Length: 632
Image (tube, rainbow, N blue to C red; front, side):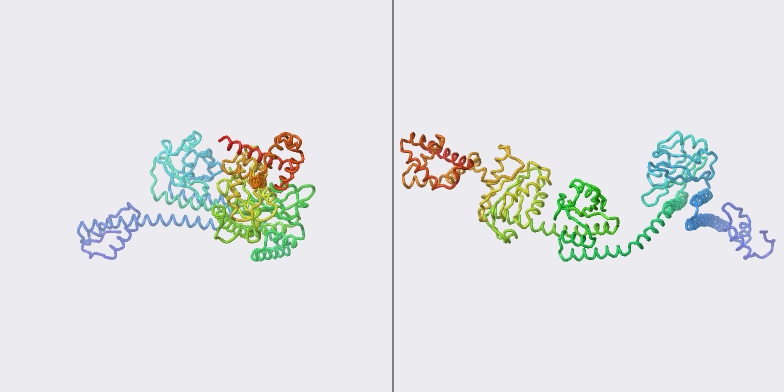
């Protein structure tokens, strides 16, 4: 713009145009024309300098806006290509080129994670001059690239040769030196928790990168990560389409079967809501599938009939695999096939469903649905049983301690009277698990409680000895304690007798180990002589004697007879009537009459060796008591 002629009026329009042109010019452009116009306008020097300074500040702001516009346009272009993604390599090449142009660095390159170890390989580069660098592999844990990938944060070094932020590798150092690179800026390519690689901008001179440059390169890195992630997804697209088409064909072919399975599911759900048992569910499945189906408990035993099942070991192994996968397992044995599906359980083995196998998938899906329905039944049953068992255990502990309880009678006590008490030594086992298991086995036939390391059962059913042995065998297997012993105290008819019977059984348990008795269920009656001889109870021996010889001793005391002395002599001389008569100096018929009277007074089979042993032990204890009293 030319300077106005002297004497000519000041041209305001020309001044405005010159001012606008100066503001739009590139930073550092000459502004002499603006200065001349300012001089002509009559503005003083200070104000003129302020106008020039404002124009230069506008130049810088406009330059930053133009640069930002170019950056955004480059990013938008990359985003549009990402949407129209056809060739991944082509998109990444363009992305690296745009980053290179906008960053203004000597070299820009992208490295991808090559394997599970985390090694990175240079895939796309601009500005490189050596072929070795274009295909450079950076081992995991070395170089700036590994640091960027490991920390998932941007990192830069003004001089790579003096870098201390990451371990050096000679192969990498040689490639960097051959390329002549000095300063590096790297940002991670990450999607979620997955690191896909790193994007780098480098110069062949020492350089400190600005935050704006870090942000710009990070924006390109985000786009590159999206491209790589999309490529991974698209790599599976063809296979996914094929699987979808196959699934559609299978769905079309098995529509009727699926509807049948859905009907079974609804029927199972209805059964669960109406309070059906696992056995009821199995019956429903068997009827709908038209084949045999079995339900097994947690130990692998069939709940109803085990004919036609494979070996128990084979079933438990298959159930373990099914429990791990959540799906039905197929097993074969003896030319036959079965489907095995574990019933899900929160903290224990809830059991297994087994069915004769077929080629269709409907049976498999139906069994898997049935397993979930059975799990709901089991959870409901377990919750109810746990509440009942806890309530019954509190009742039993009150009865043991006080002889009675104000709490509601357990179901077993409402349906029958107490018949026996059993105590099992579960030392070393988990008392909670043992109590839960025993409660399931005992069911409504008794009441279970745990005290210290003892498991206590009050039976309300005949055959307490056999029932206790069944509980003991199950616990021995579940707790992996084959030596677990148990003692049963029979003859309990009143609740007031329960406490004493339990304490007696606990005392009997203490005798089993010294006697070398383990892994069995023993009747407390069989331990009476040993208990009397070894008990620390002051009255134990007297009670033992009176239980066997009480009527005889009372007869002698009332009538002044010597029936006990005759019986004691009979025991000492080997049960010879003739030798008794000789020692007591009486006739044999007198001995015979006395022995007959003794047999009438006491109950027991003299021909039973166990009874004879107890009788002799009682006689010898009474002789010992009389000798001790006479010598006092």
